[in-house]
Length: 391
Image 1 (cartoon, helix red, strand yellow):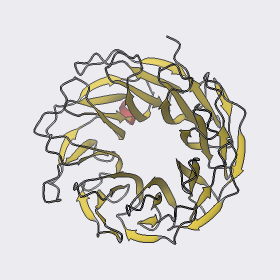
Image 2 (cartoon, helix red, strand yellow):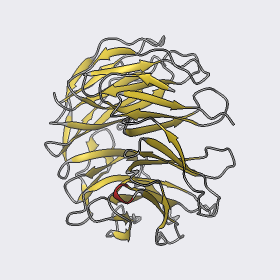
Image 3 (cartoon, rainbow, N blue to C red):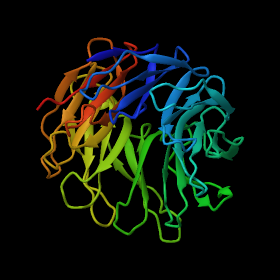
């Protein structure tokens, strides 16, 4: 089912914005300087969009309760005017006008969490153009402090949050798209973050995406990176003292763009899947208890499909993880059902219609039937597709 959005819908998130226990949708419209809110009816259908102004070229969106009123709010990274927008929710599906805060130059990705352990949500945003990361600490009333700026590598793109050193403080990892590295920042109580640790991914690596997980069952969080320029994934295993081992690489096919983790063969050890954009397939790497991985096993996503995003979940309720990809080149979504032994069925394709160029995907139960559905943002058609499971 298609729903209209603004121009160039780029990033999508979900949450219950009107407290009716049904998931709703927010999407950033980059070419129109708005976000669209689509309220869900709980049966998989959605109301027509309501738009709210943002800053210039909104490129990333996230949700959280910023003023501790139990209502979800929205934060948007505005890439062209170097700000983030905060839209406070009223709990009825409507939002207040934006309040903006300065970031670095070219904010790219945004995430929210409590970085200083005061039970108030804070914001982290990567700034592509000036090689920095901004932290905005929240006061718990919808107001944020001025940014604290930390240097990253060149062209920081994606960001994730986790506890890498088991000290009760959240840490941050950033991929540097043109900087052949990822940066890890360890959280420090009440004061922000230590200087970054630079994890070198190699000349020409162009790390595009990353994931975090405990790959060798030692209780430490490790890092996996998709190196789009050198056609490999890089694994950084973390030591007990907080440092990381040098990168161990495993060959992929051409242009790995997106990476995700899960246990695909039911051995309680994390495995990896990567979308190889220019090879029209996904590669699966089965993990071993020592943190090493098998060579990739390839599963096709379709001729000229150009898969650019991958995610994992159990779509057919058989307790086995499956794979889903957005196929930018062929205007469809591919689902590969898992057998539980590290192998997958042939891809099943779901059309998003000609010229849509699906770019981003989110997974959730949209109609309350305990079956996972998914939402796709289409760059080419300037709309969303929702796909509901019916069996």
